Image 1 (cartoon, chains in turn blue, red):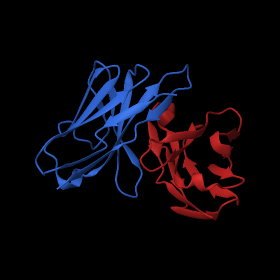
Image 2 (cartoon, rainbow over the protein chains, first blue to last red):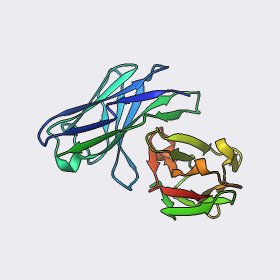
Image 3 (cartoon, rainbow over the protein chains, first blue to last red):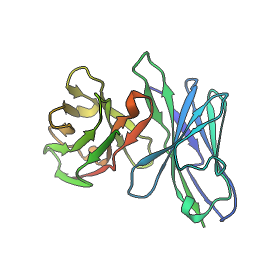
Image 4 (tube, rainbow over the protein chains, first blue to last red):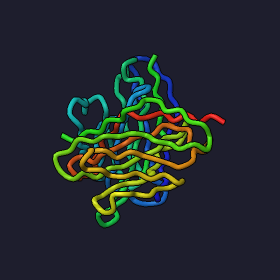
Length: 117
Length: 113
């Protein structure tokens, strides 16, 4: 498998500020990473696909200017929530895609809980 | 379009009794289906996956699931629940057999001593 970390695990910020969340693949190089958000007692919703060295692909309804994704290296993708508002409060989860000859598998980070006051 | 429906938001069982977590899928073609488990403060972990090989799929920790095309179901079972099985379980389908995943709403499993 793959080990994925996220930092920070929790963050509280004031409305209008920006918050950066890091997702690291600790033991292999990941060309593709995914970002999800999970509201309380709800399912995970895919926000975007992060591709190393190219622009992220956002899902319908996700504002790319609000949720900035940078996948600058094969082990790090960052999600920046710009001008955060209380409705952005959520659990953000990343995953890395391990390519295995048609048996690709996603490995998930432990998540980051964002609270916007 | 692909989707999964988890029929129970909560399931409670006693330790040592069987577990059944229900999932129905909707897909216009033969899907890839997964079950993931989410423990508090831990990342989602893959329990098992179905990719059009054997219809009965065995996973980790004694879990298994059976793909039933006629019923469009992929229910997760375990013969004997353990306290450590208490967690949130997600049934997942891949989006048109890409690497994108579509999650169900989850089932919280409680295990009582």
